[in-house]
View 1 (cartoon, rainbow, N blue to C red):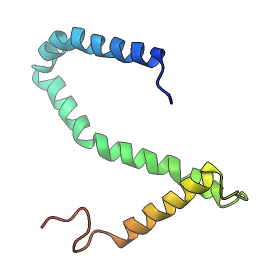
View 2: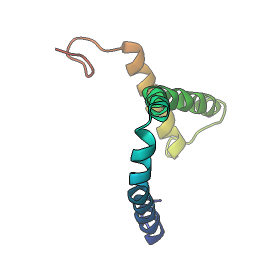
View 3: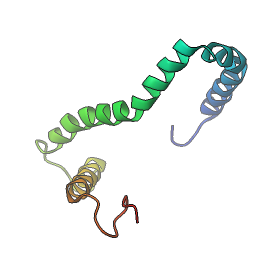
Length: 103
């Protein structure tokens, strides 16, 4: 996907067109209480599910990095270093003057 290709452009235009064409049908369907309740229920948990599944995928993958000798110039070394920085930031948590705090 890097660099973007004409195939990705065509795919994007096709997906947007499909959503635009399906919008009237989806609005009618979601005006009923049961489908709307299901969408709201799943939607309220979607980000949590997404983040948990990412941690389940990244955890085992990053632990394998510790078992393999790594050349510092490889991409995997940069990814592992980034994961360690994220881990350190998560352990530190939000504090005064840090991102994520409400003042």
